[in-house]
Image 1 (cartoon, rainbow, N blue to C red):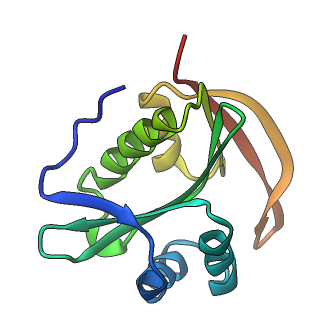
Image 2 (cartoon, rainbow, N blue to C red):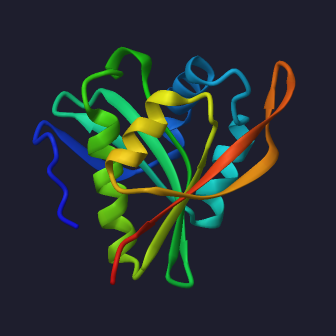
Length: 156
């Protein structure tokens, strides 16, 4: 899969210095955000922690992904509120799909809330298919929310 990316952005490893920007996006976008410690642990254990910036060096987005045993798993992806609705999520997903292939993955999986209609629309448009449902996976104001498990085959 070849990514068609906005040439005004670039991707790099997430650094400890990025955590404040990451947390600002996380807290703004999610009612039940990951803690700062979770992000620090992801960096520490060597997960694929990536940041997207524009040509001016402004933080746009972050993603956390694992790659092992021919499978990648997108654990978290988020676009800073000021940059939402401009196609950066699609650009970042294309980057992650390419990154997964570079790591030898044949499949990529993720979980998404059924209530996250924008993300679902993006994932389906990229070719992801629902393969399962994890009941009571996410915390919600009503108790728990299921997670739709999605898969994209990267290689035939």
